[in-house]
Image 1 (cartoon, one colour):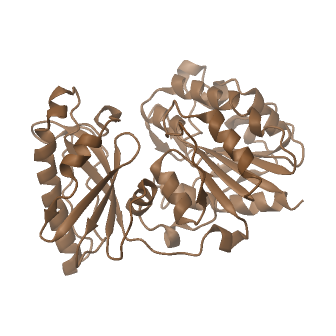
Image 2 (image 1 turned 30 degrees about the horizontal axis):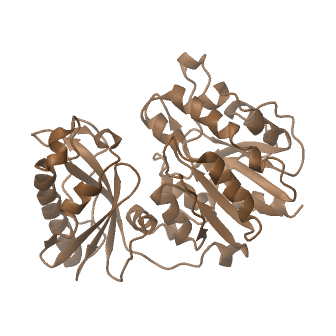
Image 3 (image 1 turned 180 degrees about the vertical axis):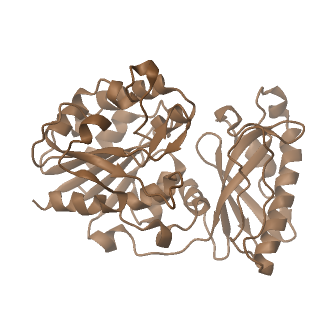
Length: 394
């Protein structure tokens, strides 16, 4: 059987009083997702988490595909840079960056600079800066995000993050995580770049017009690229990915999947959902496994907009028709993690999952509540691929 894995980022949530104590998914009208659930099996996934820390997007996705994050995660920066299409050379240090807004005292007002989208001119102003022989190459990612490559000699990725992930605090100074000269040097040079880029961005004409100036870069996830045995080697399946967000493109590329480009697939709430599902259906002629990523539910929950998250889930459902009645195909629908709208952050709530195309369930609706009673039960994220392959062989 062929397999389509649809990942709605941040799908799960908590009960919300304004939605009559339902989650956005429970409150949403999802007739086609409900049909898929009724024609398959359901359950709940426990997101990958180290020591009960909040799940990260990169770890969660690697775990979904059965690649243990502790071994395989090269760092968020590497995956983000891969997704932008930048070339990574041996010795390069890769980082993920956010354009952010800070005040005159460097206190963070907005970690995403109002989710600024048009950043090309700002990136041009800071890309190519060289400090002590290290060149900084910057590439636009989705919205406020960017990929950063530090290229030079004697660099070590064992450095800390600069994003405190809290408003009202100053960006964190980068420090070396070990005592090596390379890590100390890397941290020092990056601190100098962040200070210099802040001055450039602060005085950039485009930022003079903005209410939330994109005047600082919050960095995290430093890493070096490493080659691994990918998805096809692990499972014997020829795989492709469809994604708008650069991180998810990077994950697909890192695992050796081939990219399917879809016009208007941008990782935002106005992404071309119908185009993604039509492309996934068409890709089954060439591929055994198609990973289709949908981002916006996560962003909306992080903004606390639970109503818009509910409406976006309904929008996904409305556009699902191209993949509903495919023959000899498993449709798997889940999230990478839950994102709680009231706390505006990733959370440890279990993630609903359905595997449709084999078997019947008693599920009346696809939701956290109904999946809790499903045949799949509650299981660890690293076990999903085993379950998918089990049903694909039945």
